[in-house]
Image (cartoon, rainbow, N blue to C red; front, side, top):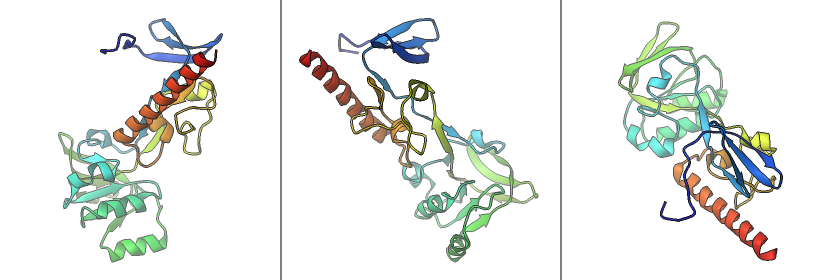
Length: 236
């Protein structure tokens, strides 16, 4: 805010599109801002499994990243909840912090016989029954109840969430998306659409979605924008 040419507008953007030779950014309150360049840093949204009570614990005792929150779960009674094959990878990461791990697939059969055998050798319990609800207090998980009446006690764990773009602007602008649904960029955040850049989780969109990586992506996109603006003005 110390820079004289910086202004922060706390407004919700509802559309971005080409307007003449500029990019128009349209807000919910009816304003339109014209820009030579736009950086999309809208991030991603978690897609949660449809399990009753899951939102009460996500971010407090259930987490999505073993690198971010594995240490806080060490030596606890841990659950890995996943409906996807990456449950095997997540469980391996969590096994580094706790030897008391239960894997719940919520009624899905997602592991190979070889993976199941390895879990058995490591004393990792696999439960493929459908989950009825998660119970606990003030964000702290205490139990998992299954539809067959079975119940287990757990005090935290990891959750395999899906990811999707938090805003539709990249698609509406015609940006190329990668196979995982992220915005495809080169090293300095440039997309295939002239004047449109992307940075953060919405562009790298991989298993290492972390604040520090997103910040680095933002720095590179800023370098791309400034370099392009200077080159365009200098050459004209």
